[in-house]
Amino acid sequence: MSMRFTAKARRGLVALTVAAGVAVGVTGCGGGGGGDDKPSGPASAATAGDLGPSTQEGDSGQPLAELRGSDGLLLQVTSAQRDSGGFVTVNGTLKNDGARTAVIPSALSGNETEIIKNGRSLGGATLVDPKGKKRYYVLRDTEGRPLTTTGFTTLKSGATLAVFMQFPAPPAGVTEVDFQLPTFTSAGIKISG
Image (cartoon, rainbow, N blue to C red):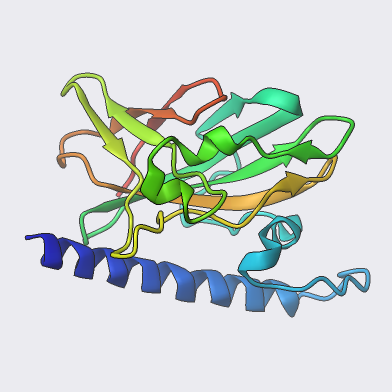
């Protein structure tokens, strides 16, 4: 069961990585970039976030939820999509509404040693099914890396960063869950798909 589960998680991560690569490639062809020569890739995730979130199918432009954190940080959850592989992918935008550069709190990574050793992430996020009384944690690959946005440490004032987190899917009948992220307020979100 564990090998089958991790194989599915890997396939989901590969599909998500390919989709993110296509989205960044298409955004880069859009022109009007103002001559930014910013590096891309995991080491520069905070600068890649300046591109903004990718548009999700069925996205009405209104976020599902807005969560306030410390130092002017704001997380807008833009989608929570269930896929056929048994996952829920939560997409959003992390924004610095503060007047100064914000240091991303290490608490967002959670407190699990395996996730913390892989660097700064959103590995502390959870989905809670209040009716079923069950909590769902961010998935990890076979090397313990969380299936979420990683590699960011600061966010300049006014800057945004597109983020994602992947969770095991609750039972099919569960469409409303509470989204929680350490140091942020919690909010109810609706799962689609």
